[in-house]
Amino acid sequence: MFDLERWQEIFETLSKNKLRTFLTGLSVASGIFILIILLGFSTGIQNGVKSQFERDATNLVSVWAGTTTKEYKGLNPGRPIQLKNNDFDAISNKYAENIENESAFYTIWGGLVNYKNESGNYRIQGILPGNQFIENADISKGRFINISDIDNLKKVAVIGNKVAKDLFKDEDPLDKNISLYGISFKVVGVFYDPGGERDESKVFLPLPTAQLAFNGADNIRNMMFTLKMSDNFEEAVAESQAISAAIESDLKLRQTIAPDDTNAIRVYNTLERAEDIYSLIGTIAAVFWFVGIGTIIAGVVGVGNIMLIIVKERTKEIGIRKALGAQPWSIVGMILQESVFVTMFSGLFGLILGLGLLEIVGPLIDSEFIQYPQVDFNIAITTVFILVFAGALAGFIPAYRAAKIKPIVALRDE
Image (cartoon, rainbow, N blue to C red; front, side):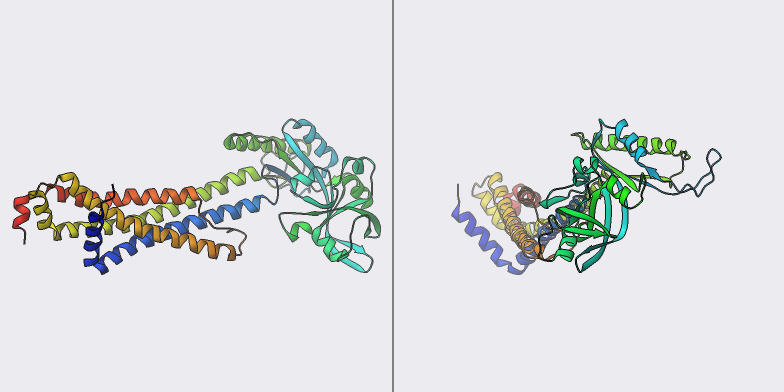
């Protein structure tokens, strides 16, 4: 039941010590403010890292060839490794049950692309249809490379948004012909990529067409696979690691490479990298919570101190209350209510200030690794419960001490 006299008494007590109450409230408000800001930026870091992974599929295994660094079976070190179509086919067939999407790549870096009087240098890649999902590329116009293009060696191209803007300006690029080193290709699609302009500065061609047009024989630069994901993240990482290791071993066997030569065949597993980064993010979040909670505790200790002083100053008053028949629980309730009020009011002020600042500053932050810093509503509610608990905890010892005061002793207090 709402007790007006009790609240009048609390406000009267606090108003007698305005500066002390203000400084105590400020320490609590700053504690919750710092916690909210830290948690907001922790979320911002998570959003930034997730956006980096959204550029390509998270469950991606990439295979690249390098140069041997060790002698093996009579073959000298320093031997460049060239991957072939049949290497890709062998891996694709062997791990078909585990593979979701796949593509081999024939790449020309900085290839010259012309349209009428416009020209530019872009990455030209012969790819397979599965690359659309590996790149997370969305089609804005037309279509992507398909199986018919592969089987019939069609001279078609899918270009990135940046290429379309550079070469075609405001003209619709669909069904127009672009020239790649004097060879004409029809544009059948335009794509955009979460990676931005860097990943949109590409021209995709059917893999066998690119190999034939640019004298690539059956050579490929690299290969990529996305793996079917288990519902359990830890299991998915373990499976991905096992398949990555098996692919590396198979290719070393096919290319006659020493098993411990780490440079000749390089296999990158983004899921494993994701696990490491998310683990780091979890550690950062834990540190932020630790710092924020530590700051709140410092403020709560201040509340506890002020309540001890208030109890000391009101010893005689408490003694009179008990002499007139006040029960210990009513004394405890009075002190706890005062403590919780100071903590809650100050903490909610800091909470609102922190959320408001994140709402204003968050959209202005321009960083790849910190995006949309904000605090989840459930976390905000959790901080409110933390404040209630902290306020009760801060007032318990002073309240308990007040309840134990003997009236005769209190009345003698000067």
